[in-house]
Length: 223
Image (cartoon, rainbow, N blue to C red; front, top):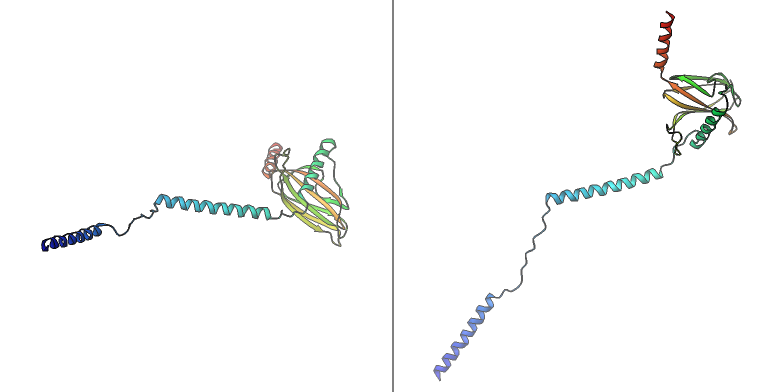
């Protein structure tokens, strides 16, 4: 009986030690290591390029909005009106003679441009005339894009001025003919906010060097 008790007691202790050993080998929880993504130089470069592209798109959109919101440049005479005058002049010069212009409304030339189509050398052209007191004179020098037959014509204003005739009734102005080639000069006479007369001139401006060469050749022939 005593022997059986000892054997039983030994089995109990053996069972306890075996359970303890097994429990010590079972993990108490899962541990998982997750490696953080590494930002390589290539990745950095791609992100920077994306940021720059986004900035560029935003800047472009803002610039386009500003251009759309920007009012058209104000001119003394509307561009459409200038083009209308050009069409009229070109048509008249084909069907009529290149007539002399002595008066524009109440304005009478004492020194100016004689005909509707003229050739002048580059430089300053003086205009002198007599008019009526308080009349306003609008002067616009401009050119039209080289592709005149194009449906989308471009007008470039070279000079524009507005003058009011005083008590002396004298009008004087200067036109700077700096651009070589075909130019147009519009002169309008305005009274009480109404255009009472106008004339468009076609001016072919030649280089002053051409004049010097011609004068030099004349002197050589004269010897």
